[in-house]
Amino acid sequence: MKTSEKDLEGNKPGWHDLPRGGLILEPGSAARYKTGDWRTLRPVRDAEKCRNCMLCWIYCPDGAIIVEDGKVVGIDLDHCKGCGICARECPPKAGAIAMVAESELREKDASAKAE
Image (cartoon, rainbow, N blue to C red; front, top):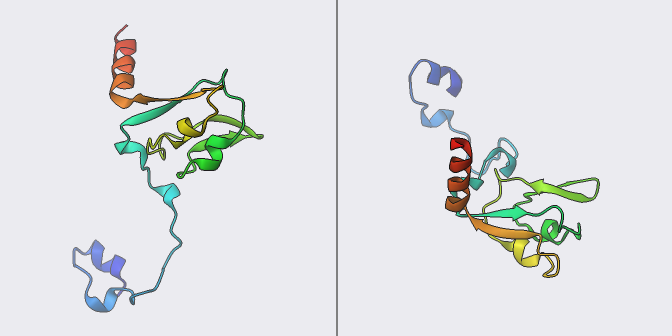
């Protein structure tokens, strides 16, 4: 009997049903897990100031910079943890990315909805 069949019947799997240690049964991917929920600072990108130098894309440890046709088009907030590396690496003369407190943005969103 397979583990999934036992789960449907409400039984817990026994040790015979567990995979052997060290076996990887499926490839891992962070794409399935949204990790941006606990972010306290959000990168806010000014598209008019952006020079598409791609430094934010190169340095982003989460792969959260969205690029299409060689240009930055946005930030994947589901996977951005708010580390601020993108804003730090953005050329100072451009200043296209600013880190803003999530609480401040939530207040703005709430007041915009109320109007």
